[in-house]
Length: 120
Image 1 (cartoon, helix red, strand yellow):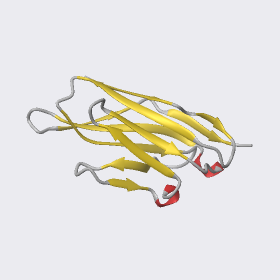
Image 2 (image 1 turned 180 degrees about the vertical axis):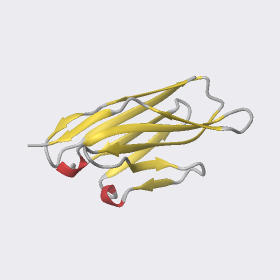
Image 3 (image 1 turned 90 degrees about the vertical axis):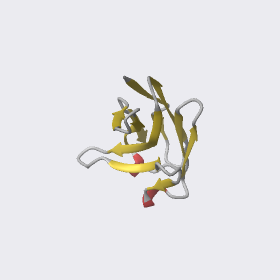
Image 4 (image 1 turned 45 degrees about the vertical axis):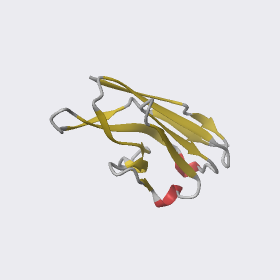
């Protein structure tokens, strides 16, 4: 089994910064993709930023230029640096990890989520 644990959420004022961290642990043959999603009240979960299977990055248009995703392959971690935060960034942020098994099967894992609240 794979465990995904996030940390770093909290309350921040508009214009402030937060850094989210995610670590995957357990029996991992290979990680295919890692990224961050968010869900605000009354809205569907959406992609924030992610590393694809090819190693490239995808960002939501709303966070481009403000958020930066980084990854440490040796530690199976992915971080999200969030700058110039806005009230509309308020949401529960969840880490997603897609693993590849020995038979090339893909498995999706989610963390428990961490609350980010941007408010004055």
